[in-house]
Image 1 (cartoon, helix red, strand yellow):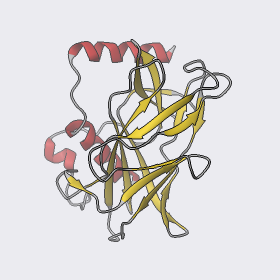
Image 2 (image 1 turned 180 degrees about the horizontal axis):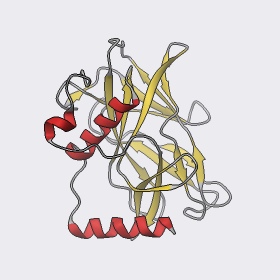
Image 3 (image 1 turned 30 degrees about the vertical axis):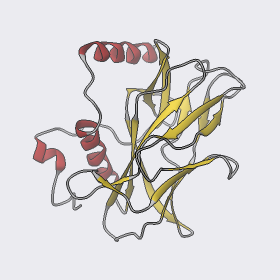
Length: 221
């Protein structure tokens, strides 16, 4: 994929929204987990279902600690665990879409090595990655994301994971998506993130849009 020579958004006649950057967050609305995005300092950026991170070579591992997962105090119950799981196989950009299943895999680890999950080889759910809720009912953690089984091409490459949150007493979140860029710039990552927002995330109905607007307004207070 050569984004410098081929603009996905320009080809689609779309303006690029300010998507890239920010941690994954959530609220509970109507008994369901709903994903939102926050800045590293915790400022709410509104409802979101697409997030991103840049992979770099760290001692031979293709690694990122972004995006983090940051939940506002009072959202969850102290002493419980928020669960995160992959819900599809890892995809790789093939020049026009993320239809291609990647040859490698992506793992997410937090804390002990045993608290780790890997993208499944087919479109099934992985195990659960656990994030302990802190004493004030929130959390701010950065899992280790590692791409394995892939030889970098030297040019910009992009990978897509689909994931969901689970929490006792609430309905699982709708699927959300994380784009990982390798040998890519932040501008390229923004462009791919916007492509996923337009082409992969299901379009919400009018009632869902109203609900999301209400969530955004509530979080800004």
